[in-house]
Length: 152
Image (cartoon, rainbow, N blue to C red):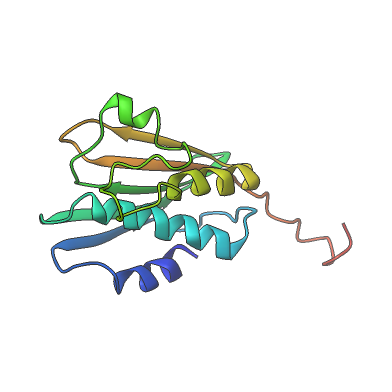
């Protein structure tokens, strides 16, 4: 799902932004609706590249398995946020954009979607340092090889 979303997202990214991936091998599955998960990735990536508008920047999307969770992160080299902004970013209709450039619903919707998955989201940022959003999903235990599909 992550790589599919990034293929779609790459059409939106200006040439001044380099998109990198750090996807570990053998990351277990998570319980999430693929379409909604794609929406989350697209929203976080769009916010990341918008924070770097007018500059050269790096947007990194990663996936790793720190047991017992799966972590997805989106990191940018943008301008970062102060603590007062961070405290409000998941509020509906809160935006730092100019009038007409955003609804302020994106991160609020992301937060709601992630809660429906049983996932959590954290932000690491400071002014001048960029921003990293880290999403932690509970990993789905692999099915035993002895059970027939549909038998459990």
